[in-house]
Structures are given as structure tokens and as C-alpha cells.
Image (cartoon, rainbow, N blue to C red):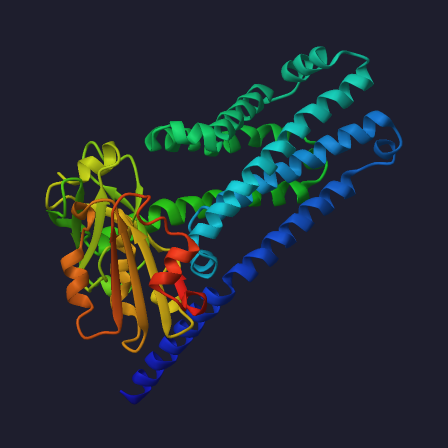
Length: 426
């Protein structure tokens, strides 16, 4: 019995150390691994370069095109892994930072792939003494899988345009999401022409094996963490809609029940990608933050009616199965490094702030600034008022038109004079 207890204690200690290490250093490990992979890829490319490539104008141009294609594709794979929600990376870096990195890698990788198309065509045109357009169509018809590669390039253009801020603001979320999924198809369509026509892979089996491994690993990561793991875990914990409460005319709180939910390791302030398995909702996953501290048997989100999906959630039936990806985000009380905290939220943005109120140390002094236009928008007010009783929490309800409370530095300092010394959650 004693040996079993010692073994269990050792396993728990090791698991705790591993979790601590990955959550604190996962980002650094990911940077080292991705940089090493980039170095290996460039090493293969430089090793493939021949003397003639470096001593003729056409050879230099073609080499630039090849390296651009390799780098562009490698960055696409990295951007997909970044957004794959790998837990040990996400817990260390934070989902918001990973999304920003994903958005920055997109234009860079697309620019490199465009350079690949332009420089390869231009270099071959110089060799064959043809116009750029004539050479482009000859490459398209002469080499294997080039029509698939062209389709891939066009899909990348569509994804890039739809992700531009001006365009994205005009698209419904569901439309943008479906267009963005084309990036997976674009990667798949481009793969065969690289393996079958790229000189680096035709004459170097090690490089070919490395490139195949990168694509398979990316596919495995996406399928595992975006689909298989969330589905298996959600069914194991039996996540289902328990009931729905209307907080206001356009905000509903959805209560999701389950078993042994403590093993999900969710915290107040976390969010999940929620997929509700009913006819009109199962095809989309949307991110919503927890609006109450999670318990062993219940999770809760509060959703404002801002579109077709969010509107439908107010009518979702009890017993509906739920698949949840997460928990994600580092917007938690554990990230606070002091005993003075300011929480700032507006409208339904109060949800994650409400969920972390219970997680702070009782000695923490907290100012909660809750900004709305009308009193009807003060959702969860009764809960907040009950939570602050007897605690060092002050709530500032700012109700009125934008010109009444502009949330400038001087306005905030009137409410919280020592804000510069506080940890601020916005």
C-alpha cells in the first residue's frame, strides 16, 4: 500500500513538474524547434544549389524562386501548427499572441509563394528565350500537378483577400471561416508538385523524406488537437446543454453540464471553441469565454445575439451534445503578479471578468469597471454584487452614452488613482 502511494505521489509530482515546465517554457521550446526546422530546410536548399545556378542570371533567379517557395511553404506549415491549439504551446504563449503570429505569418508566407511563382517563371523564361506569359503556360502544361499548384495559389489569394481587415469586417463570421478553411486545401493541392517537380526532392531522398514528414506532422497536429482530442474528451465528460437562461433581451447564458469537469483544468477567464451538435449549429465552432467559475459538473457561457449562430444559442434545447475545444487563453487570475488589480469590461465583455472574480486571493484589492450604454445591458449584475460582499472589491458601473464616459486616461485615473501600479485585465 505504501509503495503504491509513493508511486502515485511520484507520478503526480512528475506530471505537475511537466505541466509547469511546458506552461512556462513551451513558447521557447516551440521557437527552438521551429528555428531548427527552418535551418534544416535552408540547409537542404543550399546543398541543392549547383555551381551553374550561382554563375548565371537565370540560375540565380531560379534559385531565388526555389528558396522562396520552400520558405513560404515552411511558414504556412508553421502558421497552421501555431493555430492548431497545441496545449503546451497555447498555455505558455497565450491564444491571442498565437493568433497575432498566425496573422503576421500569413502575408509573409503568401509573399514568398508569390515570389516563387514569379521568379521560377522568369528564370525559365530567360533560359528558353520566351516571354513571361508564354513560359508560365508552358510550365503549367509541361510539369506534373501544375494545375493543382495553380489552384492552390489561387486559393491562397482568396484566403489572403478575405483575411484583410477591410474585407473581413464586411464578411459574416461564418463566411470568413469557410473561406479561411481553404488554406488547408491549398496546402494539400500544392504538395504533389513540390515532391514530383522540385529538383531538391527529385535527387535527394533525405530532403524528400524531411518534407513529407513536415506535412504529415502538421496534418497530424491539426487533426489531433482540433478534432479528435476535443471530440473524445467532450464525449468522455458527457458535455450536454443543461438549460438556458435569458440575462436580457439579447444575451443568453448557456449552462453545459458534464462529469469530472475538474480534469479539463479550466479556469475563470478561459474560453473554449464551442460546437453544439444540432442540425443548424454542428458545422461551426465559435469562441466564447466562461462567464462563471467552472465547477466539477457545470460550465457556463453568456452569449450576445450578434449573428445567426449566437442568436440560435438562446433557443438551443437541453440535452444537446456539446464538443468543446479548450480551455484556451491566459486571461486568468493566476497571471496576476500583485495585490492590486483592475478589471475593465463593456457589455457582454463582463463575462470573463465575472468568471475570474472568485479566483483572486481574498486579500487582493480589486476595482471592477463595467461600461454600458443603458442599464438593461448590465448583465450578471446581481451575481457580481453578491460576489463582492465582504471582499476588497469596488465596482464602478458606468452607464451612459459614449460622451459621458470616454474611458480616457484622466477618466480612469479619477476612478482608480493608482492604476499605473495595478495589474489590469481589459
